[in-house]
Length: 322
Image 1 (spheres, rainbow, N blue to C red):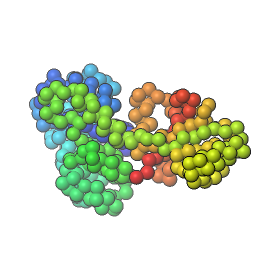
Image 2: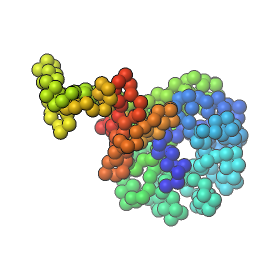
Image 3: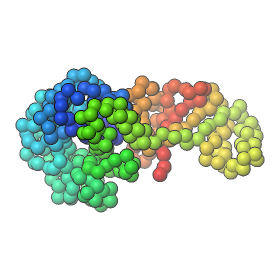
Image 4: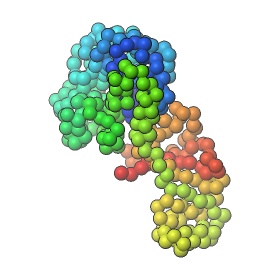
């Protein structure tokens, strides 16, 4: 997969932006970055698109900015000249796709049928936009269409919002979702940058789904661990389960049989996607201990410790289950 498209997967959400005035581009880019989502697909539905892309990429070079609703090769040229790093189109135009592929420009065309998926594969693509997602059958259709085509991933766009994105984003065949609810045109035109930042931050929070999975308590030895676990069970009635290195008291407390990670112990933080959470934390300046990284049978990250402790507790990420 193209490295730019791999970044889509790490972001999870791609804001789809319609900008009527180029002067709104920089404050919008700042609002997205402040909200924790430094990425944007600027649609070529307005005359301001190319100037907006140029302004965004100049003011915020760390952002991943691309062009959407690209219908012609001339628009491809205009978008790339402005600084666009990727191209997205609502449908699959073989001429436009071939033009991008020949120039090694990442392109994600829209599809809604197996025939279009086969065209995309023939053109050498491994990521397609599923559009309009909800109107075309939603996640059920993605699952049905994906079955015969093992090597392709989808970016559903159209009707995706804060209430329905999680089932999409937790499906292995979905790379990312495109959405516009946090960057609605009326908010942009009204200059409501604080509200866009708040909506973006809320979308990122919901996408990652951070929560406490369990707390790990260190012990000097197994005997001390057993006494602590028995106390939790006796006082609070928590069921007890012994593992090779610890006792679990219910699902939320793990009593280690030795001095484990952290001065006090550890806290497991669950998330819908360890991979996206890793990218998010690193974008925010936190370091990860890659020597602790574990992957599942499909090769996806499922566990990793942070290098920084929190109040004497080491922190690790773990997959959240539906």
